[in-house]
Amino acid sequence: MKYTFSAKNSESHILTVQVVIDKVNEERLLVQLPAWRPGRYELANFAKNIQEFQVMDQDGQELKYTKLSKDLWEIRVEKVQEVVIEYTYYSAELNAGSTYLSYDQMYVNPVNCCLYCPNKMDQECVVHVDVPYPYEVATGMERIDDFTFRTNDFHELADSPFIASPTLQHEQFDVQGIEFHIWFQGEIKPNWAKIQMDFERFANEQIDRFGTFPRKQFHFLFQITPYRSYHGVEHQSSTVCLIGPGYDLMSKRYIDFLGVSSHELYHVWNVKTLRPDDMYPYDYTRENYSRLGYVYEGVTTYMGDKLLFASGVIDETQYFKELETYLDRHIHNGGRFNMSVADSSFDTWLDGYTPGVPDRKTSIYTEGCLFSFILDVALIKSSNSNYGLSEVMKRMYVELACAGKGYSREDYVQTLSEVAECDMAPYFELVETPSDYIAEIEESLNVLGLEVEVVDSTSWTRRIGLKGNYAENGFIVSDVALDSDAYQSDIIRNDKLVSVNGFALNNDLDDWLSYYGRDKLEIGLIRNGQCRTAMISPDYANGFKKCRIRNLKTKSDEQSQNFELWLNN
Ligand SMILES: [Zn+2]
Image 1 (cartoon, helix red, strand yellow):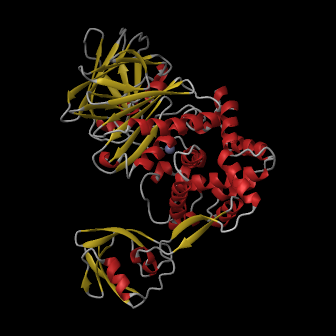
Image 2 (image 1 turned 90 degrees about the horizontal axis):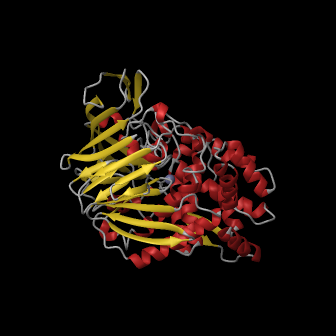
Image 3 (image 1 turned 45 degrees about the vertical axis):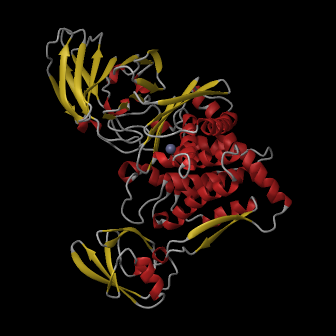
């Protein structure tokens, strides 16, 4: 299979893809475009971006085709040796998993825009990027020359994004004999010495925890935006991370920059190599349901941060802040009483990447991270060898992934139980039934000599149970805390609050709430074009609260020792 990418019209985001399929010996050839991309477990239906579509034989004669489904074509190929398919792909979306063509770059995620033959997926793929010098190409693919690359099969191609641009910035360093490359596309003045030092530390820590790295090279491809952004997508030999604004990257956004990088690197093992049975191999044509999101995203989220802390890249205060963010999200989400984490994982295919209807579901990232913390501490406590969750992931990686096998829930429970030297199955009730496991988290923190304090927000808007933002002369509600004052007065998402006790809001909801305190409130609002009123007698009891993690004032020797064991294992 040969793929050539060229710019038909950069300004208009129109990419031309040519696919050459040789050694055709069937009468009807099937070609498929993926319907989703690994890393985002929902259908994306990339075929909607295809504009022109042309099929020819080796002599340029047009071949007839019909569509069998939204993204499956059947081509009549009697007496044809070679099929050439040429199509344009509208590439106007820039995120960490998209394909984007503009005046200054050709950024391709092949899983979006590369057709494949279902019966030829194991064939070698050769990729040619048709761009002029001084363009360079950043990619994890094996390089044949400056603009030509190869992969062993379609799965590897689908997992190998590239950025071609004349403005890439690049550095390279070695960690434990593995070549790491960092590429920046977009406006950024990197402090290379600082970046390299921090990346070396967390990469080293991660490789130590697993013992080996599955590749000889790894490429971090950063899309730096001039606006605020944060998104990463994992691949086996690379990752694409979109983050911005560029002027804040080395300052305010630096920890987020390290956080997304550490998370995506951990994915090289956890999901790109060690993967649930349900997705092994990936089926690009339909939903690949899995209830194990608390492993592939949860453990990754947890370890991404923990290993930044363990390797000294971030300090205790910074680490606690990350954990507090997940605790806040946990207590802010009424969905924890309605849907388990495992079921929410299954349902990512339904509404995993939208806010969803209120209080319906949970997040595999947030809850998976907290569950992993509970397991990690439980292991440290019960294992005579002081092993933690890292040992579990290492064993699963070595025993299953390296043997070419996927894993099941039972494999995970069994490995956990082996390492803990006790039955770990009962813990799974926390993620397999709707549950609020704050008590378990408090217990785990206590083992490490830590505690969590749940405090009122300093924002009166949050205390009354509202999240949102000011727009169009009002406060647009984005979320309402379960059982809060706002909830009880039937204020709902998307309401536009316009007045408090007859006074028009002017970016000052918080000030009016603070002014009236516990007085009765008459909130004027607009819902679906109609003016309504909500009456509130606020007690500010069940608003959006904040979690603070801190060290116990007095710690036992055992607690201090547990903390060290937890951090280093
Ligand atoms: Zn992830």
